[in-house]
Amino acid sequence: MKTNIAVLGAQWGDEGKGKIVDLLTPHFAAVARYQGGHNAGHTVYVDGTKFVLHLILPYHRELDVLSEARRGERKIGTTSRGIGPAYEDKIGRRGIRVCDLVDAPALADEVRENVSARNRMIRDSTLDWKPVYDQLLAFGERMRRWTGDVSLALDEAGRNGQRVLIEGAQGAMLDIDHGTYPFVTSSNATIGGACTGLGIPPSAINGVLGVAKAYLTRVGEGPLPTELFGEMGNRLRESGQEYGASTGRPRRCGWYDAVAVRYAVRINGIDALALTKLDVLDGLEKIDICTGYTVGSRTITDFPSDLNTIGAITPVYESWPGWSAPTKGVRDYASLPAQAQRYIKRLEEVSGVPVGIVSTGSDRAETIVRQDNVVGRWLQ
Ligand code: IMP
Image (tube, rainbow, N blue to C red):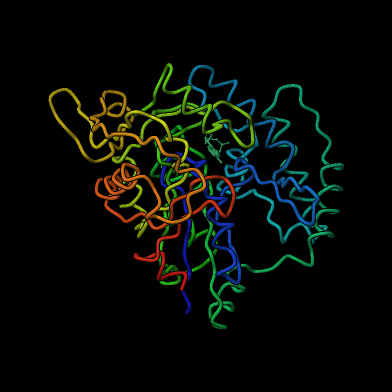
């Protein structure tokens, strides 16, 4: 069956996409990541050797740190990996592309121009373009074998009947156009980014799996309507080990926000959810779900598009009973405690899509894949 599936974040990133992609990978011939950089922490182990992936140029990182310092209290809380400045170079039509790395004269011109522009932007900066150029040229040589036209390769895969797993980074609420701007990343984490990032048509995407935690986290600044302060926030942070993968920063924690997930479902065309970290809720007496917001005397059920309204909202919660028997490591749906099944059913109702996968631990085996809905059909 030629079914390409996109996996993307339905919240503010860190939903556990990596585990879901890892789990689904055996069903696909290729995995194609469509946006972002190493703001999404990527560490890969191959035959026992650890590889930490890096993508951007050293001066992008410096510019990122500088730009955050300039914003002061209005800072975004970026990962300091240079993502914003790298995307600025792309949109400013001065970005260095992979194909330039194997074209020495073109690369020399581009690096010289970029470095001198950067030296003008950073006071007292005298960065020499030559070492940057030498390093990039060496990278180009090493990468030459693996460099090519991704759009063409994916088209060929499709014509050969091969399935492609389309992988997003960050999450819908961090999307540059549809997230909580300006507290967002600099790329399109939502589904449109898959077409522009990979050079594939919308018709090549046959299904969209949104990944959402059974609660909610966010790193960095910006609105998080259901944020929990105090004891409950700490409880979720500690049991969920909620510290940023690439920066180690403590994540802000909150209850599941169905308004935000419904928004992600609408703009991405999400068909089903993979619900992660259910086991983190084990042992809680009650669990809240945000189903709407109030603004003054009004109740709203759609995620507002402007920061002023977001700043004025109060979440409306439903309370559900927790469960005492552990869900940790449970591998089939029927073995989940009745209250956990009820909680998931309610999340499906308020989110508007079925839950096809439930993750009950960090190990690949600690997962429930439900055969009775669309996800089961995708993986047949
Ligand atoms: P940047 O992508 O480093 O520019 O950071 C912009 C915003 O996106 C900040 O709030 C970051 O914390 C957030 N962000 C970027 N990448 C990730 C991620 O992989 N997971 C969660 N948050 C992220």
